[in-house]
Length: 292
Length: 338
Image (cartoon, rainbow over all chains, first blue to last red):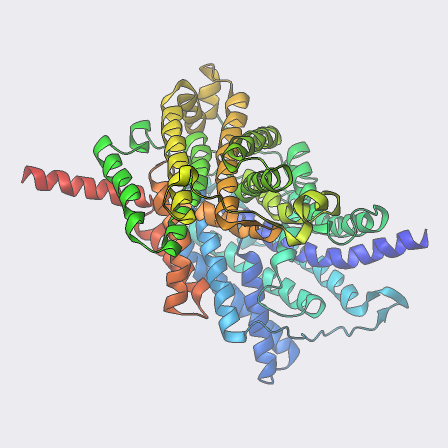
């Protein structure tokens, strides 16, 4: 029983990483109806910016805020320059665009900061949390930030004018345009917010997985799995899905001997396929209704 | 934000390509064929090998084109089918001593079955969801191939070495050249079969599903059957390409068939023009040669150069090689008249 509880705790700790990433994935999906395959790379790039600022002697929280601003502006810029012209293009073209963006960001980061693994500081320290060996204060902090972020997003979308406008633009673009909402800029705003959330995820994840251009590869796939499990249309679902994927992954690795460490990734992927087939809308998402 | 409704995306998943625009005219086909036959006679063995790979990837891109351009379904998981085909050929040749020619139909059949089965769950998915599910398949494949259970057959992480076949009947040509012409023969056969498939009743059913699934089913097209069939045919052709690839490279290993291969095939299709079968060879050339060119321009930034080139293609020629070919044809027509 103790093993079980320990593994669940450890799962929640890793789940926080996936939850963060899944939140960014869902944000962009809400805004543009696409999965951004370059999301992880954008987060990685922002994390490198934060690292660089700290190397130049900027204090942690200032670097954090500057990186957020950079990611937000960067997200909007990418949308305006590269993806706005593709808004009416087939899904296929958009996916190719995401792949191109992935290649560019990954390669530029590798050139500027090279591929050596770098340690990344954490503001929460890494002592055991409340005497537990499994969760460090950093991981506890990560869970706290993820949940805090979720609450902030909820408040933003429910109680601010601009949040309402974004929701309107996402659900019924044409009607939203008729009542005077600039839907095109709402999409750009969605990109900016997704990039900013991604950068928070990157900064939180980096102390755990270490900083390098390929650090997001696996995390993004788990983030997708979490987003799909929770429902691609629900931020709450994304966070819950993230924790569930983390716990599930850990328990499967512990109790099914054949799985071990090697098959953890296929497990996440099998989860994606199972959820997509059995309940495509996910746990909290809304089913898709198609008009004939 | 739970109040947010589903977004109704106006953009179609795949652009509709009329049937006539999917193939080349007879004249252009013959010129292309002559080039493919005569070209390799005058170049070095290494280039012949590269041309063989060009044909093999072209086959794999063609397979994806039938799936996406024909029936409108996505796949980012073609590398999985390619891997299954390659391993089938390699295992049959090395463990059972089967002749390499005979391994290809087996690889094709096994992949057809695999694709047909995978098509069943894929039935319930469309657009980005299908892309995600196939993406998961492609990422999982190398890990599955490394499994200890299959190690006796697959050679685990080490992979398998495949012997390169000699030219038969004592023909005085090198192994590489023989393999090229062998691949070319297979490729032409599959190309003709694919063109005929798309022109047939089944092909029309594919396209009806691509253009409007609901309308297609109202007209009596068995949507579930034809969608899984498209998956099976596409996987089968990819499997043959994988088998040929294993023979040409003389080596199979789990890490040769990562998600990168699937992405490359996908990009090949986009660059070649979705739904335009002859474009497959252009797309294949793009994924084989452009990374080399990118590396030549800047070693450290090869990924970025590749990405920028891809964006250029997306923005300047969104219909890929098909668009270039159409413009060229138009210009030729003008010249003739003037």
